[in-house]
Length: 247
Ligand SMILES: NC(=O)c1ccc[n+]([C@@H]2O[C@H](COP(=O)([O-])OP(=O)(O)OC[C@H]3O[C@@H](n4cnc5c(N)ncnc54)[C@H](OP(=O)(O)O)[C@@H]3O)[C@@H](O)[C@H]2O)c1
Image (cartoon, rainbow, N blue to C red):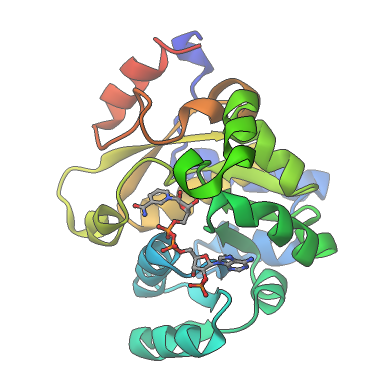
């Protein structure tokens, strides 16, 4: 991979991407209004556990409207009440309908069911995918997903979604604290849709990381899991240096 294949998404890049998407009519109207103005976004969290709770909570603190969902609506109501501000709770389908952007953060073995349950709500939706195939937890389907590559496997399970893999290989406890750090850590991300990458990048910045696009879902999605050289926390430049060594 050549270093010039990185896209380092700046705010200027984001505005350009949003403007281009508006001109082409490829970005939903609600996304155009929110991102172009730099205003708050509506985010649906599907899987409000450790990662979904930490990142979703950080987005609430950053001023976004976040609907939390899981298999336990009562817990999600408690979480939303504890966060206040723009936090609310709903079912996974309600969160998917609510969010202009979705954070899907469930055990990998739940991903096929989530894709089926959310169905048409995923079509064209920007989805930030934190989910990792972990063999010890997810079983044989995780073996298959690792062989295929997590980026491609997630595309199969979430058809029609504009996926950006992110938050895959940093511990959830760090995610809640990142916004308070002086030096931004790099957040390696992989994706295929330029506008989805731009919108996800702005949201990643809002929780204190510097997004570093390391490549496409097919080429680099497989490296965005724990235990690979990109796992852990490092500076944006270090993320770039490591990424060029990977195929
Ligand atoms: N933990 C980390 O530090 C970390 C870091 C990076 C990436 N990841 C990856 O991110 C994903 C989430 O990890 P986590 O640690 O946050 O897991 P977690 O704490 O177990 O949370 C998973 C969440 O998914 C919900 N869920 C499960 N099945 C669902 C379904 N069918 N529909 C809707 N919600 C469903 C669970 O709801 P209930 O509680 O109601 O069952 C729970 O809220 C995993 O794939 C993991 O490998 C984890």
